[in-house]
Length: 251
Image 1 (spheres, rainbow, N blue to C red):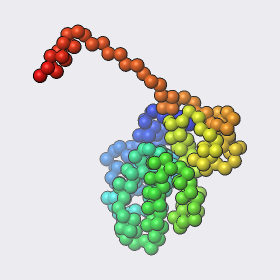
Image 2: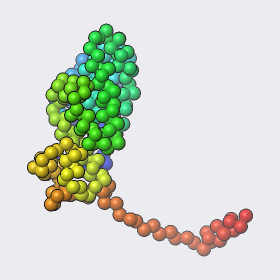
Image 3: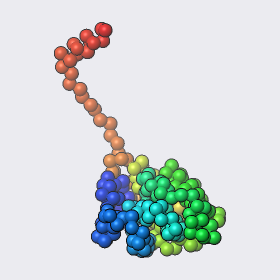
Image 4: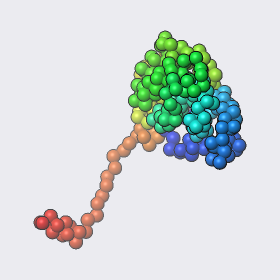
């Protein structure tokens, strides 16, 4: 069971424990900008996808190499990285950091002389999904992803099947955002936000993330963000300090 409560530790975001030492050396060493390392970095990304892991800085290193060596750009790798960004965080900068390293999709395809225009179709769609996630419009997010648009169909048929558990990753990130705002939430609303239709699915998910179901509500454990308490601040002002304040106000 993984408890869905907001994390305060960013160490794993910067240097995940699953990162091999050889990849760590490539990212932080002088070989970071060596294009001959691209196959190793891309292979590492594919292992992230297959095993359900995430290494933002390794993925950014790939995009940086594409930026300096546009002829080596791989549109499928780019899309996979953006999908990993979406399912890794709700409010984090991951997606925008990746997008900032990319040029226009049409320019990328021109450099590699590709006729597959999927990148042109998918990047704006993913960017819209990112905005929906960032603004916590989770219901609209699922509506777009489950829709019949060309980009949605390509992502669902061609890219998501390669990822270990992309939908659960998205639901978990959404749950983290919900946990930072709510101490309890109705099962009906939770189902809409997590794209879960039946009561059994919702209850099963709550159990999976360490929440409890009480009647028609899911109860979220207190985590410091959803149980804010009013504090009393006492000030100890000395008489000589008050005298200086009154004297200053006279001018």
